[in-house]
Length: 130
Image 1 (cartoon, helix red, strand yellow):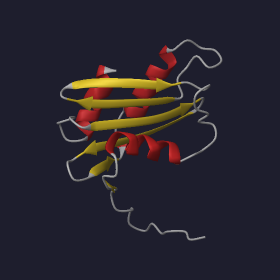
Image 2 (tube, helix red, strand yellow; image 1 turned 120 degrees about the horizontal axis):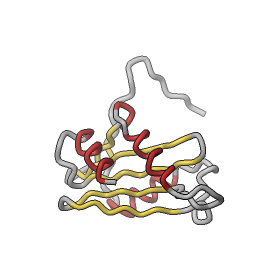
Image 3 (cartoon, helix red, strand yellow; image 1 turned 30 degrees about the horizontal axis):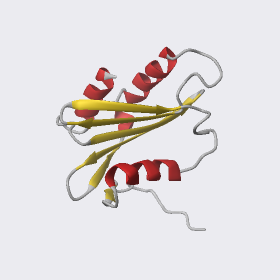
């Protein structure tokens, strides 16, 4: 878990204070989201350019194999040079059912109503409307 903290520090530019990692994981997939409290706003950091997914897989596979033995949600926060980790298991959260509200609920529980700043969409991206 300490190595994950070091990777998060590198991703956010050195000072990891205020970082929050929310992860959903299942057999064959992992979905990490990294946020940092910057005072007035919460900033999203794209973890794709890091080794974070590999590190999360490694941590997940350290858990015993078997039904409901491996966590399905991990919340990792860094505050005052200490990290805190909490996990939820399949009997608590079924991550096989896609629900973006789980991540949003975790963000609101941690940061309240602070606005979240996401990077601009990549050049050439377009928005689909219903």
